Length: 272
Image (cartoon, rainbow, N blue to C red; front, side, top):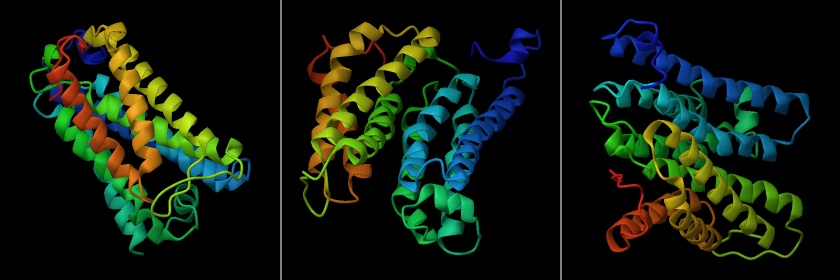
Protein backbone atom coordinates (compact mmCIF):
# COMPACT_ATOMS: atom_id res chain seq x y z
CA UNK A 1 0.00 0.00 0.00
CA UNK A 2 1.06 3.63 -0.29
CA UNK A 3 2.04 3.67 3.39
CA UNK A 4 4.47 0.73 3.18
CA UNK A 5 7.61 2.53 4.30
CA UNK A 6 9.87 -0.40 3.44
CA UNK A 7 8.78 -0.14 -0.20
CA UNK A 8 9.19 3.63 -0.16
CA UNK A 9 12.71 3.27 1.28
CA UNK A 10 13.69 0.86 -1.47
CA UNK A 11 13.25 -2.50 0.28
CA UNK A 12 10.62 -4.36 -1.80
CA UNK A 13 9.49 -7.92 -1.10
CA UNK A 14 9.26 -7.49 2.67
CA UNK A 15 5.46 -7.29 2.88
CA UNK A 16 5.18 -9.70 5.82
CA UNK A 17 7.80 -7.78 7.80
CA UNK A 18 5.95 -4.54 7.13
CA UNK A 19 2.60 -6.12 8.06
CA UNK A 20 4.04 -7.14 11.43
CA UNK A 21 5.20 -3.55 11.94
CA UNK A 22 1.77 -2.31 10.82
CA UNK A 23 0.11 -4.62 13.37
CA UNK A 24 2.15 -3.15 16.22
CA UNK A 25 1.39 0.38 15.04
CA UNK A 26 -2.32 -0.47 14.89
CA UNK A 27 -2.26 -1.99 18.38
CA UNK A 28 -0.34 0.96 19.82
CA UNK A 29 -2.75 3.49 18.27
CA UNK A 30 -5.81 1.82 19.80
CA UNK A 31 -4.08 1.21 23.14
CA UNK A 32 -3.06 4.88 23.27
CA UNK A 33 -6.72 5.83 22.87
CA UNK A 34 -7.64 3.52 25.76
CA UNK A 35 -4.82 4.68 28.04
CA UNK A 36 -5.29 8.40 27.37
CA UNK A 37 -9.02 8.00 27.91
CA UNK A 38 -8.40 6.15 31.20
CA UNK A 39 -6.08 8.93 32.37
CA UNK A 40 -8.70 11.58 31.55
CA UNK A 41 -11.38 9.63 33.43
CA UNK A 42 -9.06 9.22 36.42
CA UNK A 43 -8.36 12.96 36.46
CA UNK A 44 -12.08 13.65 36.82
CA UNK A 45 -12.19 15.99 33.81
CA UNK A 46 -14.79 13.83 32.09
CA UNK A 47 -17.46 11.56 33.51
CA UNK A 48 -17.46 7.81 33.06
CA UNK A 49 -20.46 8.14 30.73
CA UNK A 50 -18.38 10.29 28.37
CA UNK A 51 -15.09 8.38 28.58
CA UNK A 52 -16.88 5.09 27.93
CA UNK A 53 -18.39 6.54 24.77
CA UNK A 54 -15.09 8.05 23.63
CA UNK A 55 -13.81 4.49 23.30
CA UNK A 56 -17.04 3.45 21.58
CA UNK A 57 -16.83 6.34 19.09
CA UNK A 58 -13.16 6.18 18.13
CA UNK A 59 -11.80 2.65 18.71
CA UNK A 60 -13.17 0.94 15.58
CA UNK A 61 -12.69 3.94 13.21
CA UNK A 62 -9.06 4.35 14.33
CA UNK A 63 -8.45 0.64 13.87
CA UNK A 64 -10.03 0.69 10.41
CA UNK A 65 -7.86 3.66 9.40
CA UNK A 66 -4.76 1.64 10.28
CA UNK A 67 -5.80 -0.89 7.62
CA UNK A 68 -4.19 1.48 5.13
CA UNK A 69 -0.83 0.56 6.62
CA UNK A 70 -1.05 -3.11 5.68
CA UNK A 71 0.40 -4.49 2.45
CA UNK A 72 -2.73 -6.36 1.37
CA UNK A 73 -0.89 -9.67 1.37
CA UNK A 74 -2.24 -13.01 2.50
CA UNK A 75 -1.41 -12.35 6.16
CA UNK A 76 -2.57 -8.72 6.32
CA UNK A 77 -6.17 -9.40 7.31
CA UNK A 78 -5.21 -11.87 10.05
CA UNK A 79 -2.53 -9.68 11.57
CA UNK A 80 -4.97 -6.76 11.65
CA UNK A 81 -7.53 -8.98 13.42
CA UNK A 82 -5.15 -9.63 16.31
CA UNK A 83 -5.91 -6.10 17.57
CA UNK A 84 -9.63 -6.64 18.34
CA UNK A 85 -8.82 -10.24 19.42
CA UNK A 86 -6.43 -8.78 21.99
CA UNK A 87 -9.25 -6.69 23.42
CA UNK A 88 -11.71 -9.60 23.35
CA UNK A 89 -9.32 -11.67 25.43
CA UNK A 90 -8.65 -8.75 27.75
CA UNK A 91 -12.35 -8.05 28.28
CA UNK A 92 -13.02 -11.72 29.04
CA UNK A 93 -10.08 -11.92 31.43
CA UNK A 94 -11.07 -8.76 33.32
CA UNK A 95 -14.80 -9.49 33.23
CA UNK A 96 -14.34 -12.98 34.66
CA UNK A 97 -12.01 -11.72 37.39
CA UNK A 98 -8.86 -13.43 36.12
CA UNK A 99 -7.14 -10.07 35.56
CA UNK A 100 -7.53 -6.81 37.46
CA UNK A 101 -7.33 -3.43 35.74
CA UNK A 102 -9.25 -0.78 37.67
CA UNK A 103 -8.48 2.12 35.31
CA UNK A 104 -9.53 0.04 32.32
CA UNK A 105 -12.83 -0.91 33.94
CA UNK A 106 -13.65 2.63 35.08
CA UNK A 107 -13.11 4.12 31.64
CA UNK A 108 -15.21 1.49 29.83
CA UNK A 109 -18.11 0.70 32.15
CA UNK A 110 -21.03 2.61 33.61
CA UNK A 111 -21.05 0.96 37.02
CA UNK A 112 -17.40 0.13 37.59
CA UNK A 113 -18.28 -3.56 37.71
CA UNK A 114 -15.73 -5.63 35.69
CA UNK A 115 -18.53 -7.98 34.60
CA UNK A 116 -20.00 -5.14 32.54
CA UNK A 117 -17.12 -5.62 30.08
CA UNK A 118 -18.71 -8.95 29.14
CA UNK A 119 -21.71 -7.11 27.68
CA UNK A 120 -21.79 -4.38 25.05
CA UNK A 121 -18.06 -3.68 25.26
CA UNK A 122 -17.21 -7.28 24.42
CA UNK A 123 -19.83 -7.40 21.64
CA UNK A 124 -18.29 -4.29 20.08
CA UNK A 125 -14.84 -5.93 19.91
CA UNK A 126 -16.35 -9.15 18.55
CA UNK A 127 -18.10 -7.19 15.81
CA UNK A 128 -14.78 -5.59 14.90
CA UNK A 129 -13.44 -9.08 14.32
CA UNK A 130 -16.50 -10.22 12.36
CA UNK A 131 -16.45 -7.29 9.95
CA UNK A 132 -12.67 -7.45 9.70
CA UNK A 133 -13.04 -11.03 8.45
CA UNK A 134 -15.91 -10.12 6.11
CA UNK A 135 -14.53 -6.99 4.54
CA UNK A 136 -10.95 -6.16 5.40
CA UNK A 137 -10.59 -3.53 2.72
CA UNK A 138 -7.58 -5.03 0.95
CA UNK A 139 -8.11 -8.69 -0.02
CA UNK A 140 -5.18 -11.09 -0.34
CA UNK A 141 -2.98 -9.89 -3.17
CA UNK A 142 -3.69 -6.22 -2.54
CA UNK A 143 -6.39 -5.91 -5.19
CA UNK A 144 -7.64 -2.38 -4.53
CA UNK A 145 -10.35 -2.84 -7.16
CA UNK A 146 -12.03 -5.22 -4.71
CA UNK A 147 -11.85 -2.89 -1.72
CA UNK A 148 -15.05 -2.99 0.32
CA UNK A 149 -16.87 -0.12 2.09
CA UNK A 150 -18.84 -2.56 4.25
CA UNK A 151 -16.94 -2.30 7.55
CA UNK A 152 -16.34 1.43 7.05
CA UNK A 153 -20.05 2.25 6.85
CA UNK A 154 -21.13 -0.27 9.49
CA UNK A 155 -18.75 1.20 12.05
CA UNK A 156 -19.49 4.72 10.90
CA UNK A 157 -23.02 4.03 12.16
CA UNK A 158 -22.25 1.78 15.12
CA UNK A 159 -19.28 3.72 16.48
CA UNK A 160 -19.82 7.33 15.41
CA UNK A 161 -23.60 7.28 15.30
CA UNK A 162 -24.47 5.22 18.36
CA UNK A 163 -21.68 6.82 20.38
CA UNK A 164 -22.73 10.40 19.65
CA UNK A 165 -26.37 9.47 20.21
CA UNK A 166 -25.62 8.66 23.84
CA UNK A 167 -23.38 11.68 24.48
CA UNK A 168 -25.70 14.22 22.84
CA UNK A 169 -28.82 12.58 24.25
CA UNK A 170 -27.53 12.80 27.81
CA UNK A 171 -26.48 16.43 27.46
CA UNK A 172 -29.35 17.87 25.43
CA UNK A 173 -32.10 15.27 25.52
CA UNK A 174 -34.00 16.60 28.54
CA UNK A 175 -36.67 14.59 30.32
CA UNK A 176 -38.81 13.67 27.32
CA UNK A 177 -37.83 10.13 26.42
CA UNK A 178 -39.19 7.29 24.34
CA UNK A 179 -38.14 3.74 23.72
CA UNK A 180 -39.04 0.08 23.54
CA UNK A 181 -38.06 -2.93 25.63
CA UNK A 182 -36.60 -0.79 28.42
CA UNK A 183 -34.54 1.50 26.20
CA UNK A 184 -34.55 5.27 26.72
CA UNK A 185 -34.09 7.50 23.67
CA UNK A 186 -34.42 11.23 23.10
CA UNK A 187 -34.96 13.34 20.01
CA UNK A 188 -31.57 14.99 20.56
CA UNK A 189 -29.95 11.58 20.85
CA UNK A 190 -31.54 10.40 17.59
CA UNK A 191 -30.29 13.55 15.85
CA UNK A 192 -26.83 12.74 17.22
CA UNK A 193 -27.18 9.19 15.88
CA UNK A 194 -27.98 10.46 12.38
CA UNK A 195 -25.23 13.09 12.32
CA UNK A 196 -22.64 10.74 13.75
CA UNK A 197 -23.55 7.92 11.35
CA UNK A 198 -23.43 10.15 8.30
CA UNK A 199 -20.32 12.14 9.20
CA UNK A 200 -18.20 9.23 10.39
CA UNK A 201 -19.16 7.03 7.41
CA UNK A 202 -18.58 9.78 4.88
CA UNK A 203 -15.32 11.01 6.42
CA UNK A 204 -13.90 7.48 6.56
CA UNK A 205 -14.90 6.86 2.94
CA UNK A 206 -13.36 10.19 1.97
CA UNK A 207 -10.04 9.35 3.68
CA UNK A 208 -9.89 5.91 2.05
CA UNK A 209 -10.74 7.41 -1.34
CA UNK A 210 -7.24 8.93 -1.55
CA UNK A 211 -5.81 5.42 -1.74
CA UNK A 212 -8.63 3.43 -3.32
CA UNK A 213 -10.05 6.03 -5.70
CA UNK A 214 -13.67 5.79 -4.58
CA UNK A 215 -16.06 8.38 -5.97
CA UNK A 216 -17.26 9.64 -2.61
CA UNK A 217 -19.87 11.94 -4.13
CA UNK A 218 -21.51 8.89 -5.73
CA UNK A 219 -21.69 7.42 -2.22
CA UNK A 220 -23.38 10.48 -0.71
CA UNK A 221 -27.01 9.45 -1.28
CA UNK A 222 -26.66 5.81 -0.15
CA UNK A 223 -24.74 6.86 2.97
CA UNK A 224 -27.45 9.43 3.73
CA UNK A 225 -30.19 6.79 3.34
CA UNK A 226 -28.27 4.26 5.43
CA UNK A 227 -27.74 6.85 8.18
CA UNK A 228 -31.47 7.58 8.32
CA UNK A 229 -32.34 3.88 8.51
CA UNK A 230 -29.65 3.26 11.15
CA UNK A 231 -31.13 6.10 13.22
CA UNK A 232 -34.61 4.57 13.05
CA UNK A 233 -33.28 1.11 13.93
CA UNK A 234 -31.32 2.45 16.90
CA UNK A 235 -34.37 4.32 18.17
CA UNK A 236 -36.58 1.23 17.95
CA UNK A 237 -34.08 -1.28 19.33
CA UNK A 238 -34.79 -2.78 22.78
CA UNK A 239 -32.28 -2.02 25.52
CA UNK A 240 -28.88 -3.58 24.94
CA UNK A 241 -29.59 -4.85 21.43
CA UNK A 242 -28.61 -1.85 19.28
CA UNK A 243 -25.00 -3.09 19.04
CA UNK A 244 -26.45 -6.00 17.06
CA UNK A 245 -29.48 -4.55 15.29
CA UNK A 246 -27.63 -1.56 13.79
CA UNK A 247 -24.77 -3.49 12.09
CA UNK A 248 -27.11 -6.28 10.92
CA UNK A 249 -29.63 -3.90 9.34
CA UNK A 250 -26.91 -1.69 7.83
CA UNK A 251 -25.25 -4.74 6.28
CA UNK A 252 -28.53 -5.97 4.79
CA UNK A 253 -29.33 -2.48 3.49
CA UNK A 254 -25.92 -2.14 1.85
CA UNK A 255 -26.41 -5.41 0.01
CA UNK A 256 -29.94 -4.38 -0.99
CA UNK A 257 -28.82 -0.98 -2.31
CA UNK A 258 -26.08 -2.44 -4.48
CA UNK A 259 -28.32 -5.23 -5.80
CA UNK A 260 -31.53 -3.25 -6.41
CA UNK A 261 -30.28 0.27 -7.11
CA UNK A 262 -27.11 0.05 -9.22
CA UNK A 263 -27.46 3.75 -9.97
CA UNK A 264 -26.50 4.31 -6.32
CA UNK A 265 -23.04 3.07 -7.12
CA UNK A 266 -20.27 2.36 -4.66
CA UNK A 267 -17.76 3.19 -7.38
CA UNK A 268 -17.95 -0.36 -8.74
CA UNK A 269 -16.59 -1.84 -5.52
CA UNK A 270 -17.75 -5.17 -4.18
CA UNK A 271 -19.18 -5.27 -0.69
CA UNK A 272 -17.41 -8.50 0.06
